[in-house]
Image (tube, rainbow over the protein chains, first blue to last red):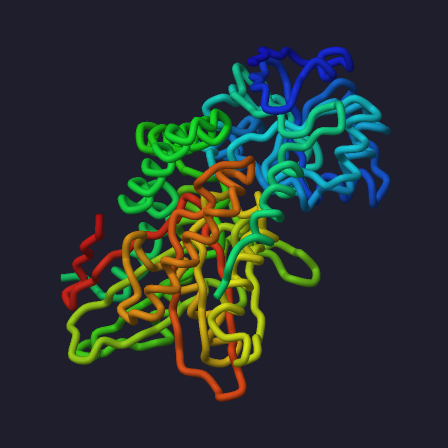
Length: 192
Length: 296
């Protein structure tokens, strides 16, 4: 089933999404990466913007700074989420984030947090930055420019997707399902 | 007639940008076959992923833009015809300058940081980067310059194991398949799985890297035993069902490339280096008069 979502998201909408449903997003999304979240959680600096109901994209965009100080998008793509797994639960718990857009998936503890708090992981196709850049209409805000390109970004998006619901708010992970099946198959392979 | 060093710099700059924009024809064909395979399997999610990948390649062509935002770390393989007198230090200097110009002039996102302080260089170059492998072609009158901007999602999935000789070929097969399984969704499958066998530990790793950066899909190792290993590994990896982006499907790997060197009687080194679906690389030949011919 396909869902057209508008931001911000609430718990009811998030819980209505099922594994392997597709979604597209219109509204505003945040861009975050390793250094952004190290600042928020390891250095204890609260984000200077309300992220309640927010969607976070795991990215460090390629941009060009314009004379008026704004940023022009050059190439915005997605990085591997698994590296940033430990930040997902506090993002939801402390700052009310409802969805993470990334590639590569998240680990068991995040799947459990998404079930408990009400959150989803939306898989984008990694490496498909040309399409992604087209679907991001504008860079609205950037905070913490000293972390460039791993700043805290806010983008305006239109029909961003289709993204695949790969972890739902009911304890299901498509990555886990595929990995479990693959593990069984590897056990059955003959290497001689 | 232009200065050959100026041409090396210009080609290095141009290849860096071209490799990021224009997916090689052999990789495009393999991706199309992947879409057909997922469609035939009736797997809607895998078909959606493969369709999006091909759509993205098309959009990058139409918009003349980067395929992926990861501009990687620059890797060069330089084959120098020994009929040319080339100053090696100048060559390395110009390759570096070419990367710095590409980064500044395009501009490309810079990825290079100090490994301890994480302080960025902002140039996509630094100590030991670009990685440059130099080879010689006896009597040749040109420079064959190949470039790959190696992306990090796949590079982070690099593995080395010094197996026992008694582990033999089955041990090699098992290790490679387990590496691909452990990597899972992270290296942006469908991947190109590249294997370096033998040598010393560093040689094995280097061979795997050369296989991932510079081998064409469809190319077969001229050694029949290595070729047979390539074919059997591709079959085993695709039997895992990890599929495009690790979301399930028939196409986990587009190809497997094996390169080898002789090794010690008591060693059995196996290195794995993974390339993501974009399989990015570009090549040019620089003639003695400085003219540059870019390979399509």
